[in-house]
Image 1 (cartoon, helix red, strand yellow):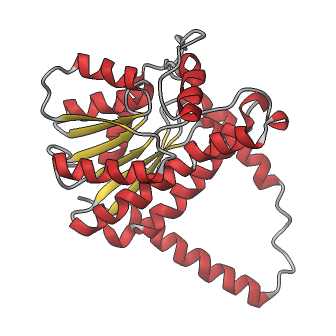
Image 2 (cartoon, rainbow, N blue to C red; image 1 turned 180 degrees about the vertical axis):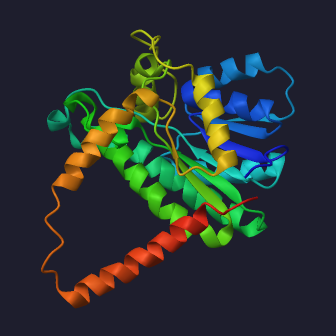
Amino acid sequence: MKNVEGKVAFITGGASGIGYGMAQAFLDAGMKVVVADLLQQHLDEVASRHPGANNLHLIRVDVSDRPGMERAAAETEKVFGKVHVLCNNAGVAARGDIDQHSYEDWDYVMGVCVGGTINGLVNFLPRIKAHGEGGHIVNTSSMAGMIPVPAFVGSYSTAKFAVRGMSDALRLALVPHRIGVSVLCPGLVATRAMTSGGLYRATHDQGGADAGETADPITRGMDPREVGERVLQGIRSNELYIFPHGEFKEEVAAYFQRMLDAFPPAEGIDPERAEMEARRAKTTEETRLASFAIDN
C-alpha cells in the first residue's frame, strides 16, 4: 500500500510504546489515526501531545472485550470513514514462569494477545473488504514468537507464536481482496511495558479505574518511533515479516537450521502422498508470490 496519505489506521495499544510509535509515523505520513488503548491516563498523554489535531481520534477499549471492539470499529468509521490499515498491536504478559501460570494467567495473556487480535480482525476485516480499495493488516508478534525464550515469558511467547502463524495464513487468504498482511517481530524496545504491566492487568481485571504504575521503564531498547517508521515502510513495501532488530538474525538462522536438521531424509515416501504434498506446496507458493504483488 504505497500511497498512505489520507488513509485511516486503527491501532490497538496505541497510546504508548510501539503503538504510539506507529501512530506518530502514520500521522507524519498524512494518515488519519485512531489510537485505541485500555489506559485512560495514556490516552490523556497522547491528547496533550496533539492538541486540536483533526487527524487523530482516541478510543478507550479493552481489546479482549468483543462488544467493545465492535463499538470501536463503528466509531472509527463514523469519525473518519473507511478504514484501510488495522494494527493489532496490544499485548500483555503474565508474571512468573510458564509452568506456574494459573488458568487466570493463561486467559489473560491469550485473551489479549490472541483474542484481541482476533477481535480486531473480526470487526475490521469485513469493513476493509466491503469498500474494495484494499488495505493492510499489521499484527504485532515478537522475537519471542520466532525463537525460544526464557520461562518467565513463556505464555507471552505462546501467544506470539500463535499471532505469527495466524498472520502467515491470513496473508494467503486475503490475496483476492488486495489486503496485505505483515507480522511485526520486534526485540527490546524502549517502552513502559514493565512499568505498566501490573497497571494493565489491574485495569483489565477490574474493568474500571486505572491502578498505579510500578517498576522502571525499559530504557535500553530501540526507540518506539524507529519501530513505527519500520512498520510504515513494511506497509508501503507489503513486507510479510517486519524485523526491526538486526542483532537476532544469526540466532534465528541457527534455530531454524536445527529445525531443518531434524527432518528425516526424503526417501521411501509413498508416491501418492508425495504427489499430493507437492501439489499443495505449489498452490501455497503461487498464492504466497501473489501476496507480494498486491499494490494499492
